[in-house]
Image 1 (cartoon, helix red, strand yellow):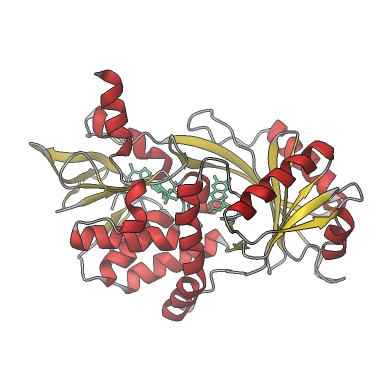
Image 2: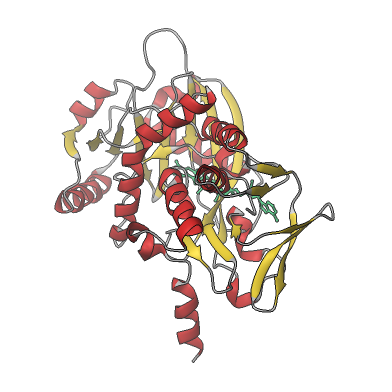
Length: 377
Ligand SMILES: Cc1cc2nc3c(=O)[nH]c(=O)nc-3n(C[C@H](O)[C@H](O)[C@H](O)COP(=O)(O)OP(=O)(O)OC[C@H]3O[C@@H](n4cnc5c(N)ncnc54)[C@H](O)[C@@H]3O)c2cc1C
């Protein structure tokens, strides 16, 4: 396994549970984008037009979450922070309201559970919302997990299942003829493997040693996130995730049970830069303040930026790559936390049987390779 982010970890854990000898190479397993991510399990409120196929995978993974989180906790004794709290997506002006109405109609046409609320009903549910909120969508099925705790539990579960951890970066993927045979690590160790899974997140598209046409089309999409602390007294500050689109940018507030309030996130395409900028922090606070004015009173405890592994269609690349012995588990973009349970199941199946399960076929790793070849003909 190249990469021990949540996707590499879940794949390694599930593969080991199925009896495969598994090693993960990563200088910092359990880190990656999950250190930054909000952990919304937002299949319905993240729905975008044209992403209905991804919606099915997202919903299937969301359905697996309660059992998945319970299994991890039972095995490791670690809590993942899974919280079935629901989500409220609100509109702040007439244009937002019209857009949210359209989204509601789209969600309803797909049979999704989403309830339209007036501004007053939104405030009844979340009293700290701004008086200007014009209406919103109540989605009781969109929950949250704490990605840092999830990563810690996955790391422990993988260790308990017998996965070996090699705390070094992969310097180069090793090939012999038309086959991937393992990897050379930065510390000089060579690891031979029958199958090598590329799960290096936003680094997956530039890993050394692979021919250009085999590298997955994955790019880094930067997100800046703030963490604040909610007051312990006076009841819940927010009882569920609250989100909106303000001046075209998504802003969300995810309240954790431990008092942390996660405020995110920017979406920027500047390569592998993870600088927290004054502008990013300013815009997040400005937009969130329009939504919930009281946030400016809260202590700001952390600012951080991470990289989403973006793919051309915002969906993951799963399964056999264009080179024998190489398997992809990458490109999960803004839904990697949500898709963790189903990715683990799908990849373990690929590694054991060689076949992607039906539900994962639309996300087969080769789908862009063909498109690129057709374009060059
Ligand atoms: C700001 C932000 C907010 C987000 N919010 C959400 C959300 O609310 N809900 C949701 O579902 N998803 C969210 N995501 C997306 C989610 O975090 C990612 O899709 C997911 O974490 C990707 O996991 P990964 O394991 O594929 O990649 P990563 O987490 O990037 O992990 C890749 C790992 O590979 C390792 N690596 C890289 N190169 C090498 C190498 N050469 N050799 C060895 N190891 C290597 C790295 O050290 C790292 O540990 C968010 C992401 C960001 C940045």
